[in-house]
Amino acid sequence: MEITPDEEDISMESFLWSQVSAGFENDDDMKEKLVHRLDRYLGERIHREIRLENCSCDGIIISRKEPRILFRFKSELGAGDPCFEVLGYIRNWVSQETKAGRKASFYGLCISVVCPYIQVAGYVYDSASDTIEMEPLTDIVCVYGPRQNRGRVAKLLHGIKEFLRLDLATGGPVNLPYLLWNYKNVQVVDAESLVFKFEDHHGCRKIAKFVVYNSYGIEAHHAWAANGMAPALTELKAATPPFYMAVMDCLAEEDGWRSCVDLVRDWKLNSSMDKVAKLQDIVKHRVQKCHDDGFVHGDLRLTNLMCKEEANGNLEVKALDFDWSGEKGKAMYPTILNDKIKWHPDVKYRALIHAEHDLWFVDRLVEQLDELFISDIVPLPRIESMEGMLMESGQDSPTLIGNLLVKMYGDCGDAWAASQRIASRNVFSWNILMAASADGENEKPAAIFLVMSERDVCSWNSFVPANAQSGHRDKAILAFLKMPKTQSTTWNAIVSAYGDNKRIPEAKAMLDRMVKETPRHGTQSSPHMP
Image 1 (cartoon, helix red, strand yellow):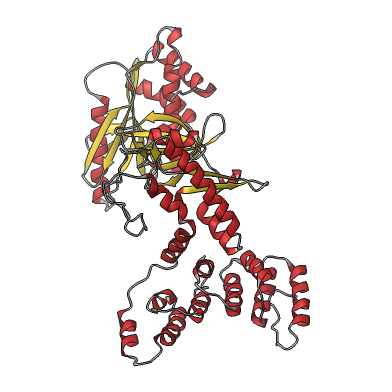
Image 2 (image 1 turned 120 degrees about the horizontal axis):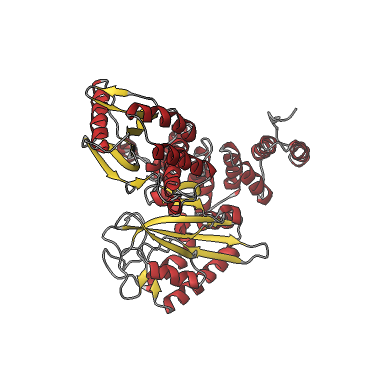
């Protein structure tokens, strides 16, 4: 990672060069001349002469009540290892914090200036194991010498300053892999999978994914990208073994890219199934080309597809997540598979990935969407007591009893739990479930509407108010315009939706239209109307 010093770094290097070359009378003289200048350069106060029991350091920068940078100054080479002395100081700091009832892991730098040399070491205290680890981060660098060697100390100083900047800006560099420290606008996309978004030195948005080199399908990723079916893999950098940082183009929302889950959901809701069929054809054609080149994916679910819809109607599609991908006949599934996903019937742990497994997902785009939303509507607790009531009710119509339970549980925020106990749902079951699920801003009404096996006029009349109530007012308006038949409650919901969106003229026009088209129904004034 190339570091470019700025004017402040070069100026600070020149100051150190002049002071060290002139020499110091003693350690106190050295501290007096250097600490104040380092204060101004780093932009952080250096606390001086902090002593704990028999250990001391010559300066300390504290961040979030933790020792972030410790300084040790010696005017000449002599007895005593500065890093070893700092270790003792950190140990005493931990002991003091433990006695005060505070014990947490922390990290920092140790900067040793032993005239005429400087060295930076890093340390980490792990509270779980109660151990301190310290390792040199730089060589021992001579502060002065031939002018052609100037610039090396400036880079070292720049690194210290950047460490402090990142610590204040991001909560500490330990939240970011060190390979990303020199990039701008670094964001965590998925902390568990070690995926990050950043801007490179040319201002281009990139994605960094930390992968195990022998496990990630690098060749497959390149092959699928060559067929237009994956973001370009632009760089591979060695990180802490066994990890590598795979850098690829970012499929950003600002550039029109969306998850295929969202697109297929919207197309289905808007009855644009021709677009779904078009997407399937494009994906199948490109995937077959990738298969012809000898590479399979293994996890081509809807959640791993991104799509960009051009103004002319053309679709661009890319696949993500090549963790298992590889050559046909060699690539294998991992030892653990998510059993909540509906895989191809032949998929097994540690079994070969076959081309038909990829196509299985492509052929089931809509089915995947239904399964995804059904599983995500509400994670549900078991309700054995209600099941007992159903079994003991003695009623001839378990569907009717189930529908009543859905209504009751909907008032308690758990409608879906009751609906799962209905063996044979009718249209009323779905309608009451959708209405009961409109509790705050969520996607549940739209999800239920998508997977309904049958709909009637009441379905539409429930869907519009449910969306308006759950905060999705644009969806409510769009659905209203497509409704085959309306009721007064639907009119009131749509007038409120226009009002909530600050579209007052349209709300007034809709209210006038409601009065003309529903003369037999009583109406309620929208609370958003003046």
